[in-house]
View 1 (cartoon, one colour):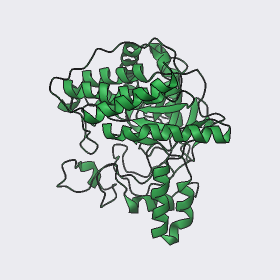
View 2: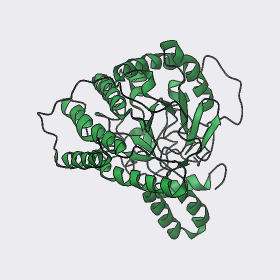
View 3: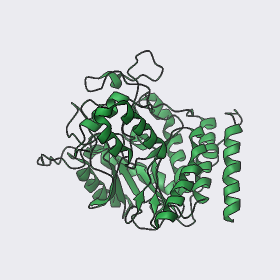
Amino acid sequence: MTRDSLVLAVGLALGAAACAGPAASMKPVAVVPATGPHAPDVNPFEGAKLYVNPDYKATVEALAGRHPDAAGPLNKLASYPTAIWFSKIADLAKLPQYLADAEAQQTAGGKPVVPVFVVYNMPGRDCAAAASAGELGPDATGEARYQKEYIDVFAAALAAHPKVNTALILEPDSLANLVTNLEKPNCAAAEPIYKRAIAYAIAKLSLPNAFIYVDAAHAGWLGWPRNIVKSYAVYKEVLTMAGGPDRIRGFATDVSNYDPSKDPTAPKRDPAAAPNDEIGYVEDLAKGLPSVGITGKRFVIDTGRDGVPNVRTEPGNWCNIKGAGLGARPQANPAPNVDAFLWIKVPGESDGTADKTAKRFDENCVSDDAAPGAPEAGLLFEPYLLDLVKNANPPL
């Protein structure tokens, strides 16, 4: 297929997605394991520039204009690369624009420009909570729409820009819920759809220019010995369905979370407990995954809110934690086994609403650790962003 025909295919796919409705007759197709070429076994961030989301940049610059006392650090923040989340089908309309922009920057600058995209529209999303519930139901129609209107369109857009390497963070929290939360009816019901949907996403998005990192939660969740061993079997099952472990570059940890990448207090490790930091968790994963045939994997760690270690009273609290700060800046090869530190959770975007009357309200968003007054998940939480900037470590 020529480049022009690929571009046309993307446009047609986007148009079909825009026009298609959740017809009851839609049915998912079986997952076909990928067999074509996949991304090479290299670190995509090494020697590359990370793509800066122009929309977020404009938002933060506008905020700086409203807060002159914090304008200096806010304008610095605006220049940093952050991930771009595609949380619903309609978001994909801007994907070709981001890719074209990255390609133009790459051509002008003479070095790779790598966007980080979060694939986040799982049918029955957020099965263990309500704050980030998505648009697709955990049923055949939701699964079919995820395949046809979301993943297929995503893959077509990436294929239309083969010169742009992309890093894909795949479905935060999804597989982790299958490890620890199957006692909850919503997660038990969603389990087969989650596995098929992620396998389908890996198979379709496994392209020469797409470096896939499957979400692996964080040290305080799956890092416990009983949980991490259970997670290996889930990953193996899903990767086998998708075409094998070679279809992904590795795993993403601490997405939207607060665990320090490296605990500065350096406490003695308790072998019966979870690691104290994400570097320890990554080390455990690197040692344990080969036991199920998943070898040579690398990791990315979200450091966007880990600047203040031990900021919450318990690791199960996740919603807009008070006192958090921006952490280590995005960078390649920061530690053994780690491809990059990234800011995956967009700094200042809410985790969930504190409004108890809201449909997507979750009790975690009014815990003693949660910042008050938060809007719905994904919306800018302006006071919270100002606090993240104020508490940044290292400072902006």
